[in-house]
Amino acid sequence: MITWGIIFSHGENWRVMRRFMLTTLRDYGMGKRSMESRIAEECSFVVKKFESYKGKPFEFRRIMTAAVGNIIVSILLGKRYDYEDPKFIKLLSLATENNRLMGSPSMQLCNLFPMLGYFFATRKKVRNNRKELYAFINENFIQCFNNLDENDTRNFIDSYLVQQQQERKTKKNGYFNYKNLEGSVLNLFVAGVETITSTLFWAFTLMMKYPLIQKKVQEEITNVVGYAQPRAEHRTKMPYTDAVVHEVQRYADVVPLNLPHATTEDVTFKGYFIPKGTHVIPLLTSVLCDESQWERPHDFYPEHFLNAEGKFVKRNAFMPFSAGQRICPGETLAKTEIFMFFASLLQRFTLQPAPGISKEDLDMTREVGLTTPPKTYILCALPHS
Image (tube, rainbow, N blue to C red):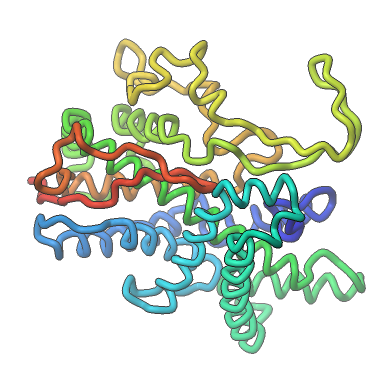
């Protein structure tokens, strides 16, 4: 298992990398108006792309993956790619393929019995894909290093390199090494793309499945926002839309098996002794579909997040970003992206299944992977007046 970066690391290395990551994400706009403006700009590109199909059916997966990918790339590299850029398409496809392969039965067996990895082609494919992703990171690392200005950092990699130089003045073998840079960038890219896109795929599929819910969302957007660009600040004024977005996240449960971690010392929990080094995998599904917490846990039911007066209510059992110290560091950014992309597209379009497919026929099967998006990727985006 890779222990560099933040996702799989532990101890002091994890604490240092997480602290740096949170600080740097905030420095480059997470939770601020500047990041909203960047997301709003990307929303406008997506709207234009959807408009170009003029109501005809199209495959929306690559468009949304590229749009979401551009947000995290703007933080990591300070740039934006065109949706048709071959290098960008390749990068996204590698990340998506590894996400799918890592959740496959053969890779699960390899994780349980590492020696089996020599007999499965899947493991080799994952490693080769990872090497290509690292090559992309290395290429951009060299560009940033050659143009580095300590007084004018432009992106995440710049900030990391400046921190590395400062650390080397006092430590010979510190935490800001190249392996941690490689791991952190890959962690941010994969986690920042796959979870958000999978959630949006479910959001679009569910709106096609439940057109009356889609209509209510559109009516609220019209009443509150009108023709203006939906922003994060509008969320508190749009309780129904906010409830729908939360219910999408609960129902979709895109990371049912959260990432594995391990105990750093012997611990007794609720009468059970867990020795140091025991692998622990949080099962988020057990909370998001807990029958004691949700009225209709296995149905898509936005009213889970609304009270009798139609006001939004928080639920303690809602934790799609995990909980505790290992909670997703990009939660604020993810929430903003999901809300703004969702509201911006429903403001402009009514989403319908492709001709010949009824809402009852929509394939709601989950794909196998670290994240579990739906298998439906074709839709028609009709202009919404």
